[in-house]
Length: 235
Image 1 (cartoon, rainbow, N blue to C red):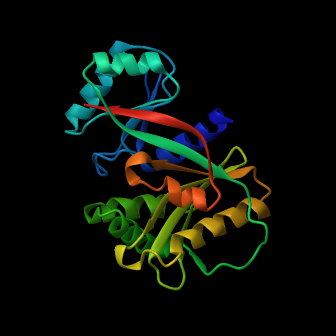
Image 2: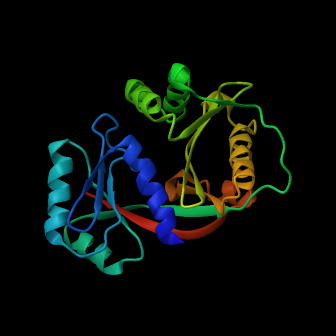
């Protein structure tokens, strides 16, 4: 199951960032989305290679960006990273939930090519990265047929991206404008996604959240359960 979830993550990230397969890891980098914990990283590491880690550091430094290295149940890799002067940065928690008990209609607007900028603006304002708006808009315009980009219909204040792979629906980029938070908009989008899992007869809804974002309790109250975690290191 972990491999199927990780494949979902890898394919979605590859839509937003340039993908490179290294010696025994998968590198993602998008200089137009700089210094991002999710979009700029090396993950899916399957061996111990100082040479590869050195190459990763070189690539990120050439782009004036810090390298983020994800370790999944790999203590020896973590020890190698510490040896290479990396420091622990954060933990990414991977959660899942099955479907809603009852289907219903949700006031959701699905983004098409002609209104990609709406989604991009909501995302960038929600994550305080307004300088990214042109790049995010470009990505959404180029991938709306592969990814389901959604916003709430009533306020146009909350956004999400849904990506299906391996009978798993991945929930990414969930964000709400600061002035519209605590109105249940994120929950609305999550419930829409859960309903999609039910109607498409998928296995479950998956999402990832970082320890520093302090949202584990929020997702737990919504019925999500933790499957596993990844440790993140940087220099």
